[in-house]
Length: 183
Ligand SMILES: [Zn+2]
Image (cartoon, rainbow, N blue to C red; front, side, top):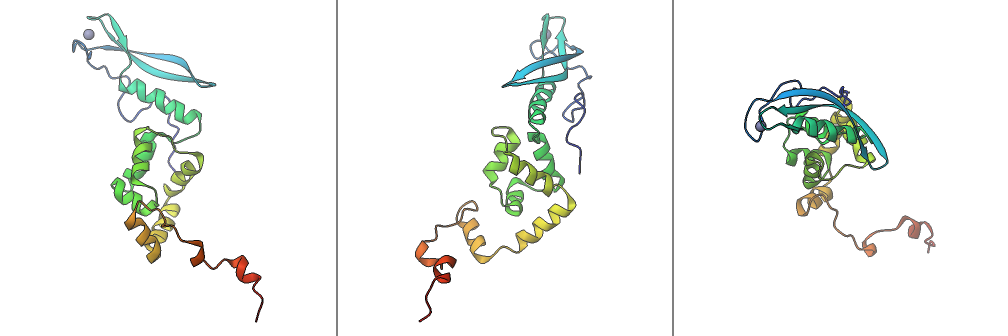
């Protein structure tokens, strides 16, 4: 299983040590790697991230690399996969969100919310995602997806994997039949 807890300074989206240009005046910036501690709810989170400095504007700022390091640190502090991890899990299977939704049984909109960080997955879904990122988990999942019943296929065709309401009168309650008196 891939190690999601990368070292704090290692970020796939960009090399924090690489200098960038100032977003205000486009002068090349210099970079200082700093330790920072910030508060998230009751948690105190420590990160190491790049601060860009523009000599022209006399400004110091974080760019997307720093923002990502901070965001990932918050997810990892809660023991959750980050939005980038979730996207990477899907990308490892080379699937669109729609195709990934079909195989996993997750909603396409839900996957999008997790990947964009709009909403964090709960712990149960987090573990589900880790399981399906293993070869064994993924092959079992694909088998399940192939074995969907006609009723399940109908339900997912009619609306985002939701089951239609089945009136109780149509269900043979096991309890009811167990106590049925033989005539
Ligand atoms: Zn500048």
